[in-house]
Image 1: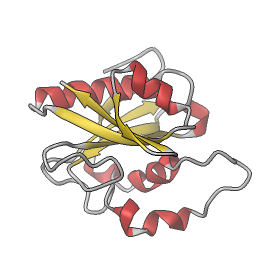
Image 2: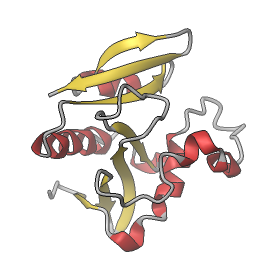
Image 3: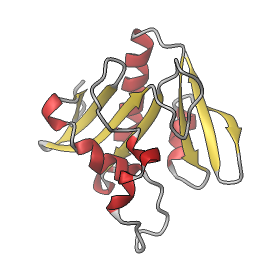
Image 4: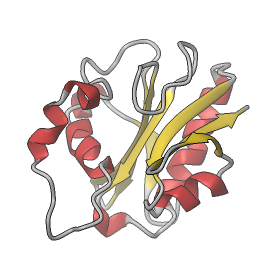
Amino acid sequence: MKYDDYEIRSIHFDEISVLEDFLYEAIYQPDRNNLVPKSIIEKPELQVYIKDFGKPDDNCLVAVCDEKTAGAVWTRLIKGYGFIDEETPEFAIALYSEYRGRGIGTNLMREMLELLRSKGYKQTSLSVHKNNYALKMYKAVGFEVARENDHECFMIYKF
């Protein structure tokens, strides 16, 4: 779908490696002056989000702005941080910092929700740090808190 200054489309097979960048961008890091090393994405609990991406139940949309991939939203049937059950795909979303705050993430989420709905999924899930500014966006598009602990909200969206 085309917007005023960007386009949202399915990821191309030869672009899948960009998910490594977006997985790192998706990590909540409140202190932008003290970032964790990118090698953190090699941890098994993070690799489940991208390793061997492209299986039949994997879905990914990217936002392209000025011929550059600005952000991505992807879902997988995995046992990640927001795991609900074996039939519920888990969301991951990230944008490069210079593209945040422009509504791109919200539109990526809405389009992915529509894609999942069209594929017959009954719900989708995600996990987010309670202090992450994106929590407000997730609630705005219809995710609800299913459970929480001291630091994280485990959210669900029902179709």
